[in-house]
Picture: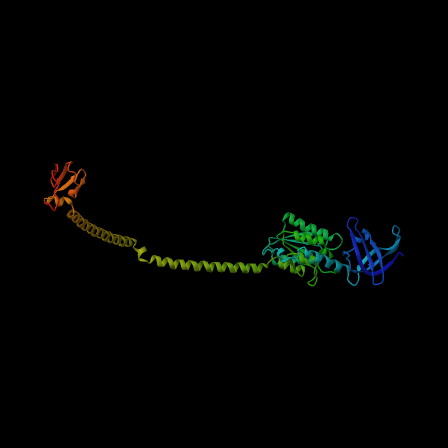
Length: 380
């Protein structure tokens, strides 16, 4: 059987990565048959078969001589009920989303006033003309760096990815616009290829994706830093409107002039208040006042010092008078004498050594005496 069509469910799917061949079983509720899809046919598929996927197969049935079993040699495979491109789109979208390529934190901001706008699209068609017209009208100050590529066909995805890498290698733009005009899903498929998605994700230049019409969504739209519904809208998002910028700058200029005038007026008023002050009008007056204050403080300090000295002098005189009154020499002047046994004063007759001489101290001198007899107070 050289041309057979089957509808069934895939099971036991094996992707033989070294050879590129697919091995699986196709089954329904009643029966099952082994199948193989060789690399030459498998590489044309837009999607990756999976276990449990219901597919429509076209191929031929032959005997696998080694096992002696019939098996299906698949030439073509399509998802049953859903287009192959739709399945491939959803598979790649899920894969890249799991890798984090759609995450908001990866998105780079679009520069507000780019000096260079890179454009990657087909050199023919309405999209490139619309882009150039809008960019030139809105912001002619920006330089347009154009890299023509194919946007449809087998080589389109590789050219788009290479152009993105080239822009980044030379840092040839401040923002990149990639896209094309509308078309069918097959026409837009280059922007659903993984190679383009990865090139967008590694770009250090912010990228605006503008593929097809407003209702068209591609993988590039999800990975890019900003999605535009159309190429014309991408041009409007990439650059500001020149007249609006002039108006904004003019507004800033007027605001700056008003602010400067207001500040100058305030400073002039402060200067007028300062120049009207007595200190600035007659600075010597301030010095004279301070000198007078200093003289007054000096007089008060001297008066306080003199008063303090007099107080201490009085206290010193009183202390000296008390000390003088208690002086033993004053007692000697009144006719009394002090008796010493060597260096020690004798305060009792009981402490006198009758065999040692004594020294008797008077107010005007001393005499040495030899004790003869001890006479107690009750005997005198």
